[in-house]
Image: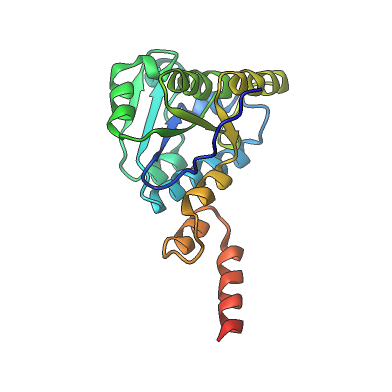
Length: 205
């Protein structure tokens, strides 16, 4: 088994790529409840914005097959353009590929519906092109347990790093003393973390 040197994610080396979180695709997701998946994707986008990370967002066949990006995510993106395309692999679209490369970031965090196609194909492409590719598994969704399980294996075999959205964002935060900590934990829907920090600070006085 090949081992890799751990190189942490940070605000200067990471970008977030959100692929095809669309209304009609959401209806087929079976590995997460719809409300949970929506929550996870929205808070990932909000935390990425709180950390100042570049975000590339895309949809596919918006007007013919899979419908619009769900409104809660559109609101969280707050004006970030969603690039619509026809290609199955987002990286095969020249505009999307150019937008990803324009971030200048080596470490790319993907999330999408479906896990194995919309997140998986561009993540594997990114890994093959020399990027460090990550998939936020719980901000992605797919249509059966089998698809979920076997494609986690496939992604891992292709060199994609698997994690959850909150761990990736907290890794980038790095230090709870940073001024971004409160906004990041708020974005991650973890207000109790901010409260604990306030309690600890009060004891330290």
